[in-house]
Image (tube, rainbow, N blue to C red; front, side, top):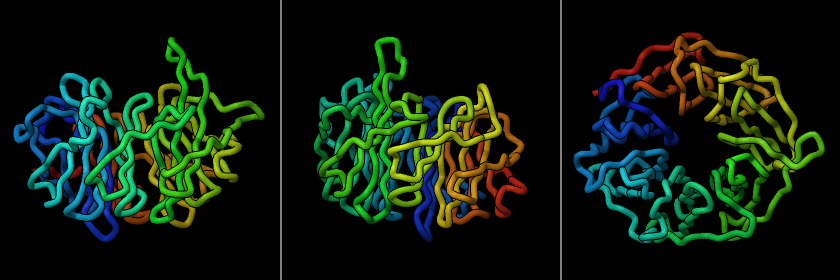
Length: 322
């Protein structure tokens, strides 16, 4: 294990395969971990000492156990996107971004299928690939300040979340842009809450289908939509000030997990109508999770925290690293 500097930032599980976790702690040697038993044991995949520049990794996406991408920033704050074709034994920087990624940390990489994907940077930086990540092209959509992307697997349908900020970083507007063609085009949805344009800070969003989804944010914020992000309604999270929610894991049959600050872990079994608190014994911030089904999965967070469960969260065990 890397020690107290470790800060786990993202997680992804492949169907019937391994799961991966990125490391955002710049002082930690290992930047990417792999687990083949849903979090019981993690082994290092990518060491920072093997990279030309030290990096902090914020996001990852593997198309299969051999082909994957990680993104983040260098010590100078420039965006970095790395790809592997051999399961992480070797990595190459994606050259297409070039100087477009100067001073633009990359926060997310996500794919709709084995060809179409996106890399998202801070602010309006937004890149798309249509050939499995071999080439990337910067995308510009009027009014879309990319904050995150959620894609329904294999359908070409999904949403890009846009947030407009004022000079004082106040949220001026929050809006989803819908794509029906894997990102070739985007159209604004016009999100509304309580009859007014949506203006909330969003950490993550997730959808079960083209109509029903949820989003989360600061101080236990949970919103639910049943019309494809056009209208939102507040849902009770049971947590309050300081318990920011920052990650969502949707599962089949209307189930999902939400997690965040102060060891907050919530689950729903009815597409986000109601949420129940799950005690995992942690007080540190939880940043990411991966589940194979409602019972089996793991959560990770700050300070090297990693816990796994095989009984739907009734009990958690600490993961082993090395």
